[in-house]
Image 1 (tube, rainbow, N blue to C red):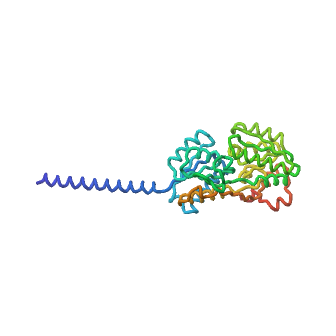
Image 2 (image 1 turned 90 degrees about the vertical axis):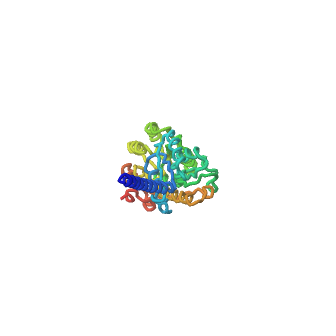
Image 3 (image 1 turned 120 degrees about the vertical axis):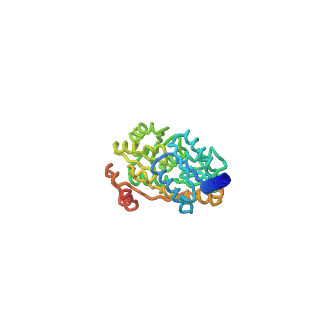
Length: 334
């Protein structure tokens, strides 16, 4: 009798233990299911520098504004730091795991586009997407790619340089041979400057190791330097700024963020806003819209911005008109 009672107790304990494990397993399985149910946005950021960092943060903010906060979407962010081989390996990882892809900067978007023709891809801050081979038309993109451009108003920037430096004759444009967007912007600068009687000269680098020597040559042979939206140069802009300061010559960047690093003036587009616009476009796709039905959005409205502190160091005086129309980056940052 005792043995029978012990047997029943053993069975009961085993049943309770099994039920507890089964319940815990179901809970764990439910949690995994909920996590898997969240859409995944894979972001490939070409390199780390303030402009692209601002775009990435803007993407997250734009998604949140559109109803895809951190609890509603999983964001996978990878950064190859301009290493072409890592673009391929990281890009493939993102393609395998993501519902929507985002390429921040032209090389990142191109790398992702080469890896998939199926997963929706949103370009973040690709200045010249047609020239880069990403879309055939900005108005009617084909396939699975659309996005937001951050194309600067190059013609207006050339006029602004002449307004600040009325005697300017030669402008050096410093950019990387690896970035199609930079080449296209350099050509725009040449055409726009020629109409003003200014010569724009190319100074091309293959990687950051070339920048110091090439920038020194550019400064020696020209009145100032113009920096297109080039990620290779942007990642080493402090070196260019120091050389320019030593030569007492101005740098005119394409983006406002680089004024904080020592640029003199620009008509720049808000990089964070480009990111917000990109994030909202990603949200449209998550909601079911097809990339081919979303025209490429051009964020082109710029603001004249100057750096008075840099002007003082270079001995440059802004005209009354410039001071009236432009914002001072040092006051914005305060």
